[in-house]
Image (cartoon, rainbow, N blue to C red; front, side, top):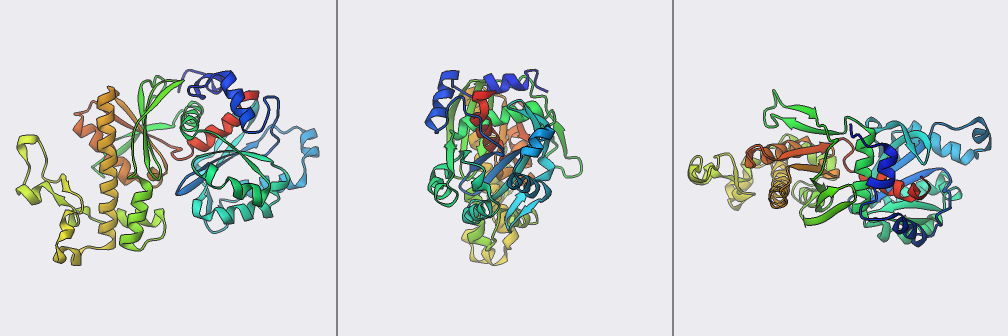
Length: 397
């Protein structure tokens, strides 16, 4: 558990690179003054290229007077959001991630985590309108590219303004806040390639700096974080979670990330990839390359006979291994260049995707000879949404 308090995180750690005056300027730029008190309900949105994430803060310290004054529409919205785990056909609340008894703006309550495919934004807006959200909320804090792409849609459909915040600021702010309020947030894998003895263990992140964040969304950004108010984006790649899903849809005719991961779980990438042993007949001992190492991703697929024998599952697994290995290689090189030993992998690519987590854990440990630690977080994918919610409210904390 990190020794700094939640209030310290809100006031000092979260707003990476911004002073109090800069924070106030951001608030005014987004259309609300430093003395405004946003009314309930409170939402934060991270609208990514593939998946949209919504966090909803439900106050639990409502006084009898507040309860009497609360409009019926707000009561209905709260009931709808908190009593359901599915919304329409594609919206889902991750009940296992729910955080209770947390404090935001001096209010104690529960933080709920909701996601839906960004391609369903039209249905989301229609649902929000049908529940009367537009009659209660005039501004919602948002981050991610979609905060710009869908800004006009929110204004047109809901008469609602988006208060936009930088996605990397929001990511770090949200990550530090969640880690501070959840002592079991950070973990690593031991024996990741051995199913019988693979084990997940929690990691003490109370003294984190410096660390590397590898944020795997549709694409990938790598950030070197040297202190609570200091970080740099040092690299990135366009080959991320969106690439994996797009290629899987083309190669296997799947329709969702979950389906692609399910296919990969029962596939064999060695039927698709060319391994070191396929070239050398065994290990390449001179450079310490084991025979089961991938030498050429999809290297077997230049053979018509090989293509005829592979399954959808094999193709999905090979696609997942290809994208994961590329991310791991870039992360390791950046960590070595920055002289950083702790590498934190986050993002929706890792949701329901223990295959990639274990591949990354093994690769970082093996190629660094145990000097690099691959770390993971329970609330991966939601940190940006949490961070922009906190930024929207931080000026009155």
